[in-house]
Length: 139
Image 1 (cartoon, one colour):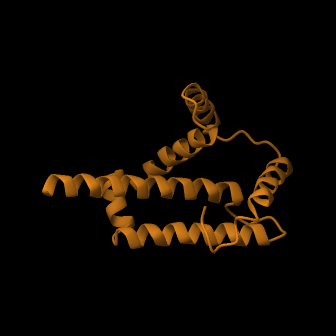
Image 2 (image 1 turned 60 degrees about the horizontal axis):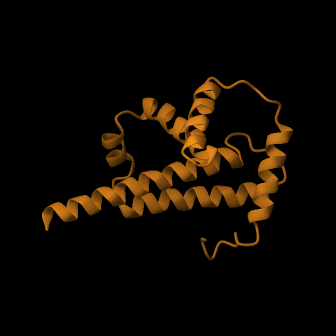
Image 3 (image 1 turned 135 degrees about the vertical axis):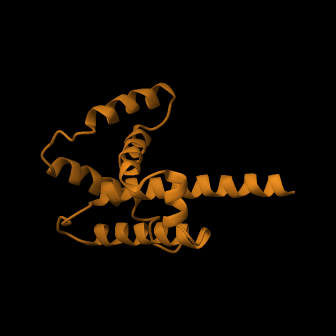
């Protein structure tokens, strides 16, 4: 649990906000819905939460825009830990603002921002694993 952001008391509120946002939107067919559903089925079989399938699909789709991931990550996160921490912090700040705001956002909403946070966390995790492998190789 992240301390110091006041989220301990807001987890229930976040869940309610996500449900409210989903119920307020009219269901549109998104071009990647089928891919998400297929990944959700695969993840369910492996006992993962379906949200990870949606996050993975989003990551795959965005990767086409950003280019080769290893190269892109070095460019987008040039300062290592500090770059990743900054992105995670920025997404957390966005979540706080969305929770506090009563109106609908113009762009990415709460659910989209949470998906981005999960994906940035996954990028950071991959970076940490890579750094660990490099340390083991050099020792």
